[in-house]
Length: 178
Image (cartoon, rainbow, N blue to C red; front, side):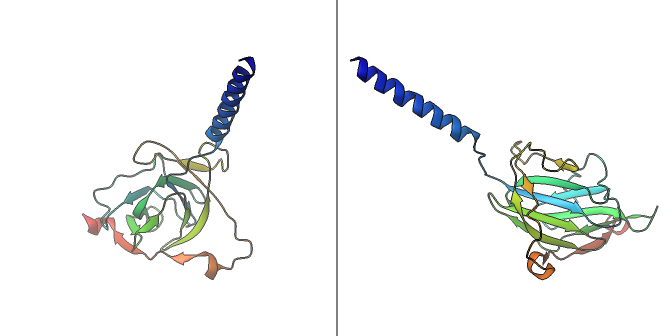
């Protein structure tokens, strides 16, 4: 009887330890989408939307995105990106949008580089939320209110033609967009 009790206790302890170890593993459900401002302009607004028009979407930035800063979004599905910046110093705002949606798949990491008048996408690694992988980044929850992340895979062994795909662009003057 004592040996059976010890066996049950040992199996229970091993099961608890296995569950604790599994709980430490991140559950990847969303894609991480890192948006990096590589332009020479401050991004005043950043809108993520599921259809071609950005007019019904809201700005996700709390404050403008400075040059070389990045914003992280976690989710899945096809997303268009629109950035608002000055046309020239102290000038009117213009909106620059991706011409095609960017497909975010579960567990995938994507990086979108924002240039002055264009975008480029690249594969990126997924990061566990809350890890101090880049203190200059910003995070946002996905539609369900949970967060998930990314990390830079670097460009070792890849030239620009291998690493980047053109996301296409569409530019609109805000004055014209009404």
